[in-house]
Amino acid sequence: MKFKKYLLLISTLFLALILLSGCGQKPLSKQNILDNDKESKTITWGVKADTKLIGLIDVKDGEEKGFEIDLAKAITKKMLGKDAKAKFVTVTSQSRIPLLKNGNIDAIIATMTITPDREKVLDFSDSYFDAGQSILVKDGSDVKKVSDLNGKTVIGVVGSNSVQNVQKYAPDAKVLQLPDYAQAMTALKSGQGDALTTDNVILAGMAVQNPGYVVQGKPFTVEPYGIGINKGQDDFKQAINKALEEVIKDGEYNKLIKKWFGDVPGFNYKEVLRYD
Ligand code: GLU
Image (cartoon, rainbow, N blue to C red; front, top):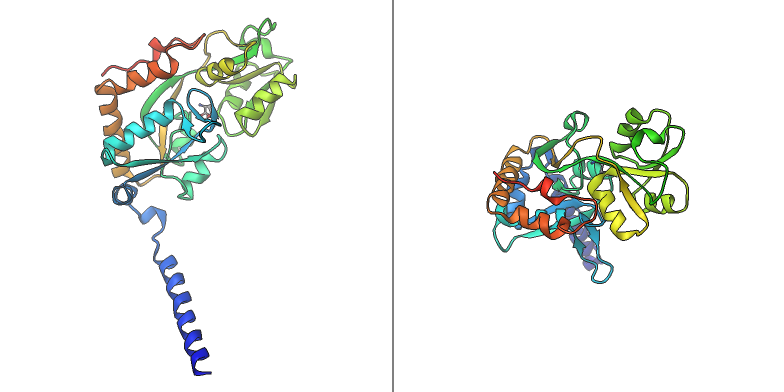
């Protein structure tokens, strides 16, 4: 009997300890993400997983691969040292901001354009890539430019700014929104729309994966990508900008551009090289 009481006391104390340690966790706004990451020697990045050339899970080894993955790794090492780790969490255009706000990820590096609307809810690093919105169609399609989409159906992805932009350039187009780019491409292939719209660099990757589909015409918007960071994390933001600058200065950035986009039909990598 005595022993049972003793056990009960210990388990109650244990439970209280767990609860207290949970309470001890400071709210995100009171934490210094840079300090946390320095301590753990890890940065947790939100990345795309269905975007060839940029962020894609390789089914052969389950590893994330692409330009943004390599850039995130390079920035992590510049910030926290050679033995630091870049951890990757998959996001979609829709989930990336909520996951950042909830503290599931430290930063978003996921084809996200710096826009005034987004700047109201999060901070951005300096721009790390210059994309532009375009359209992907079946080779031989009579949709040659964005305005040809009036009266037709265009496919886009929820949470991307492309779905709003396209309505300015083709106000009479019907927009079909899908949860991610893999599903959007499947919808285009099954004839649910006449074109798919998003950034040229994402579409170029889809054209590589899907012979018979081409990126049509020149980009009709400017989409500067930025790394998304929670507001109030100025140390973290400054450290990211400094690391990005170093990656550009020492030529690593251009190496990555050539590695991923050097040989992609319909995409001129020379236009996105960076020199300081
Ligand atoms: N860059 C655009 C955006 O930030 C489209 C790409 C995407 O869906 O991530 O919304």
